[in-house]
Length: 160
Image (cartoon, rainbow, N blue to C red; front, side, top):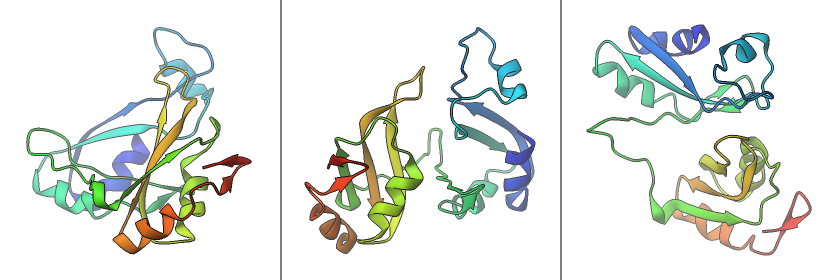
């Protein structure tokens, strides 16, 4: 939580940080002891950052796509006035991924054909194991058209 506050401090005063979707090795009612000990299955999670001033959110959105500890972060607005970053014209569905595929590996693979804005892999809620599919968001339609040509190409030993 401290890292989350520090990461977004340049945007304004952070009121709170809540961490979600942290799969731990032993399912228990309270995940905090496992997280404190570092007994987690994956190093990535979802974090919700609340700012004191709503104007800080716009500044935070500019951080989307930056790297933190080797992972690209995706920053979205939530709440009643949230506008989704999802654009179907710039998004490619990717199927038949390995259940162990990670966002950064998928990003590197698809970045070869165009500028990837974000990657979202669908995972099991409890185990955090991939479900074998996800979405790649591109900066422009040229990237989408090039990515579609990767159909039936192999990634991590599986045909996409």
